[in-house]
Amino acid sequence: MIKSLKSRAHDLSSTEKQLEFLANGQFADGTLPTFKEKIKSSGIEKLKPTQIEIFQVNVGYMCNMTCKHCHVDAGPDRKEIMTIETIDECIKLLKQHKIKTLDLTGGAPEMNPDFRYFVTEARKAGVNEIIVRSNLTIFLANPKYHDLPEFFKENGVRVVSSLPFYNADKTDRQRGEGVFTKSIEALQMLNKVGYGKANSGLMLDLVYNPSGAFLPAEQEMLERDFKKELKQHYDIDFNSLFTITNIPISRFLEYLIDSENYEDYMDSLVTAYNPMAVEGVMCRNTISVDYDGHLYDCDFNQMLDLKVAAPKSQHIKEFNVKALQERDIIVHQHCYGCTAGAGSSCQGATV
Image (tube, rainbow, N blue to C red):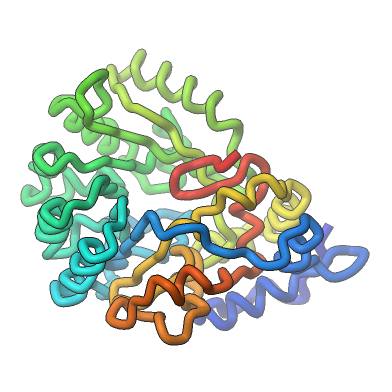
């Protein structure tokens, strides 16, 4: 077990304080092993990229929701929004380097005023796959979003939607009262235009994050349960379920401290470390871009302001494939979250 922390009244308002807090965890018999030490014991001297296949772009931290587990700390009061000039820089890179997948996230990415422009221009640029990570409730937040399912269909967007559970109690506890009902309505809107239906070619995936300080259950089992329950009770179809481990940063880190679950959670992550999961971590084939155009190994590092270890290619205006391919991926204690159990990535389990 990790030693009791001297104080739980930590001010985690800055990324530096979060990193310091994560670095100071202790086991009862000594220091918590660093993630670098852990992967080295598995025969991995340094974590290196494979090939840049996914451009994951955070188009802004504004969101119509304030979910308890949100590692982005997103909400209605966040003003950070990607400009159309930065969007154009991203589109230029997508076209120039023939990057296969554009993965749009937020906040609620749909709240960026140039969101639809980004999607349509990326499609024109020849991007094979466009993913939008939607919270679903945005469809009902304002009449201007009501036609999003049709817009997604017209542009062949793959929709990846967060749904903590297949009943209202667990979902609303994590995401707010009434969210489950709105999410079900939004999923039915997507089904109505063909998403999740056999042979439609319109992909609808769900994301499961645990509602507390524990690891997700086995992905295939949860997918079977979700499909059965959602079909039986709401006549909803979807393609795949992705299980994602909650990473101990930002709002979820505050929750762990406030609920006195931090030590046990970190203990469970380290105990469940799986060297096989390291090979499939998303930072190896993904570049994360923040709303201002800076580059990161993943969106978790983005939230901790850990820019890529390629000093001459830390912004899209300096984008250098060779430098990025040769960089060392920056790791820290939060990386245990992606390598515990069956592993975790934005595409679900890695093992």
